[in-house]
Image (cartoon, rainbow, N blue to C red):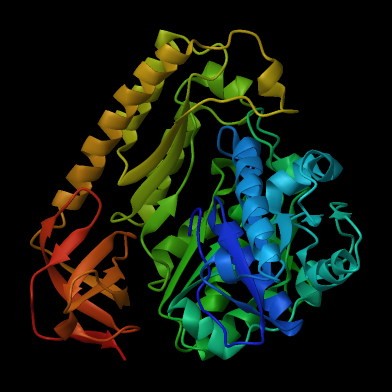
Length: 465
């Protein structure tokens, strides 16, 4: 859910909240948990801001001009609130997430229409913040929390989980200690923190009990997770995946986003040994030039990454790789860029995300010499994206004529269609006769489009009820 939406509307007489989510999967999870916290305070979700008593913007600071986009949205909401007030209603405006954390009190000064600002480590305090704001206080809650926010959040109610679908996110790790020179996350999300095993397993069991079939574990550096186990030891992500794989009814596991430096032997072995762990891995490299990687403070070389990919593919030959790439980092030469193109050709990706470098305030990269001309960055990005699109199309095409298992997630756009996900995370459009939402059906792929697979009609063949 990007630049997104909430899920349900409420009956008359209930306070309504509209949550707009920007950015990553962790923000989607955070939005859901903030909605859970507000539900305990009497709010129900609505799918439009026009009839909302509160609008909450859950922001992301990764994209270019992220703060300016938020301020523009606040301006539109102020106008909407003015119209509601003329009709005798009112609307609170709150800003959460990474832009809120970065801007803090400056946001209240620049946008007086905002009633409260709350950072991503303190959203368990949201009901109290809302109560203070309702009393007339302009609240800024952006100090990094000392307490564990997950311990203070309400349990997810089964009916709310069911409305969100059969695939769910579960945050297990937050923050980052890597300090890549292009990235604001260490400053907006804080230091790396891992949730304990018991807390994660309990939440996973509740999700599965409510009908969730697939769980994606989330973290800024999810494979840096080291949580306390029942035996008092610090477990790694490989051990956690083995523990979660034993939950009855859980059909699929995924995790994102990973750092190459945190892919240890136990985690690679989990890809070999666990059928429930899907053969898909998002493993950002960012660049193929050692000189640029050093300037980014990535602390791995291009050949380190190549060797790691070889080890992962030796453990799980059918794995689909995804990655992130930044072009035009300060000082990047034509030769540096060609190194990136060479790495992409060597590795081959099922899908990838690629961007032009844009400076983020307070990051070391913003103050580096040698910023690359915008036209040069655009030309490089176009070349890289053409190569990545060619590789993605090739991966999709090789599945045509093969049978794949599909977790059926929702109705399709056309009558008689269902849409699900392949083990490799692609959307698959199926005939409704293959099963019902929540089933894992085996289908034969008839053709591939740019971004999805289309199955042949076939007799229903379920792997799991």
